[in-house]
Image (cartoon, rainbow, N blue to C red):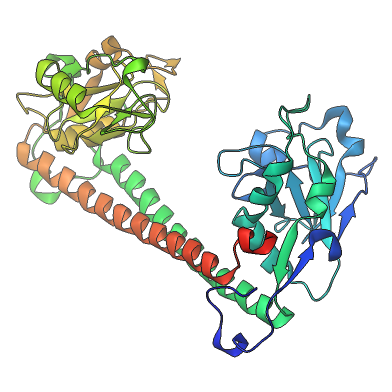
Length: 413
């Protein structure tokens, strides 16, 4: 029982030993009663967070007195299925001295053995190691409060392989340093995004104004920006409808529906059907602006030429034949629209008439449009590079964890 990767100083150490979770932890049953604690919920893949942070309010109500009280370093198993953790998520309390969680969907425990590193155990749970064990014990159907139908005895019998404490600590330190690096790179990414947002507020005219606060020196005497309805110089188009029976879970060409643009495809269609519809009906040209009109409203991307199909009315694009306003500049203008409020009404969907009547302000000069778009594109490239760097680090961590820990199958066999 040894992992694929092992630090040199531990190579000659004994094999890892297998224990049940109950061998080194104790269940927590203390109730909140009338004493006030921070009410906690869970965000899958993140950690325990306050109910105020997650829901904007505390939702305990009369059930509060039965909430389970946990201390910093304790673990809470949320018996609710998510996409990332179908068998439930186990989180360690990190950011609060103590707190209380609903007894209806949480089982809580504390590491009681000083020879077991809490951070090491936390990384095991982060990999969803427990899922492959627990799934065989989950009964069909959920309880009335929505939690998974599983008895706690199966959690306590969860087999976990452990090396000596020093090796546990070394693995935990290695992964913690990698997490710290990922967190630092995420802060850098957020700084890029905040800078871009602030820059766009300066480079585009504010509401009620016709010139921006900041202008490149060579265009400061170029006069006011043009103000025109989108429909006066461009068309809003959409692909022909694809029906559910024409899609499948896998296939040749990705099919995007509500709010999924730029992410995982909702479904796939056959290459022959795609070729037929692309040639016979409306289809975007490279560089034209794609726009989500429902789901995640107002997400904009340029069509990059890849084979993909877009659900009619949910994802549209703007045919801009005269290029009075370049597609590159149009993309940033549309990205800067406050889609949350359109025509003074909170919206969850954009309609064709909304888009055609949309008043857009843009520089009359093609060279000024290019200058602004080029500036913002350079920032987007930095953001993309930073995003890829973070994703590479995450994949490195995932692969490292697969090597540093024996697999669940090895432990349970």
